[in-house]
Length: 203
Image 1: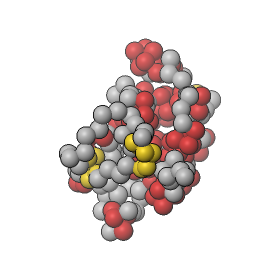
Image 2: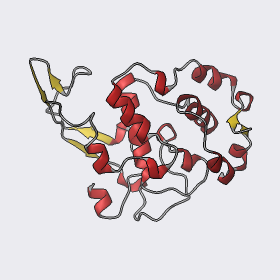
Image 3: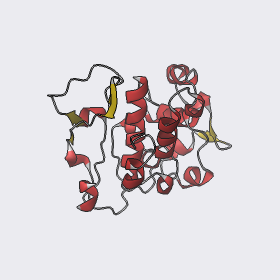
């Protein structure tokens, strides 16, 4: 929220750029709750590597963000804004919950196919407005043809269960799906994220 208030976005949110107070020992996935006294346990975190971000909110076109956490509008060469950070947060939340990266074996083509497989079909508008010819050619009748990505990447992704089918906390699933919305303007604002049922302490 501080970044937003001074007209900046981060642009490279990923676990490596999120530091946690070293005095707090994290031992398991229940790190936020004490089972004997289930009260929220807050962590002090700090974001680093702010040099990747854009100074202003004006929509950009340059390539930004580490591939595993890169929003689809960036990959497809579309205009992007601070909403790319929300997409990255969705990827990070998925990774922290499941212990694995959400979409990509490490190449943009496979990343796009992983997004399609895990989230759903790309909006026609995004495909039509794609400015990267090699990525636009991946799509046939609105879908990425698996023949257009490497066999290794396809095999690594096709066995993954789509996000909406995964068994997990329903509030967390709802938050991640909203953060990973194709439409940047449908991704929740920071206030909406902080007030989401998953992050609001339950009585």
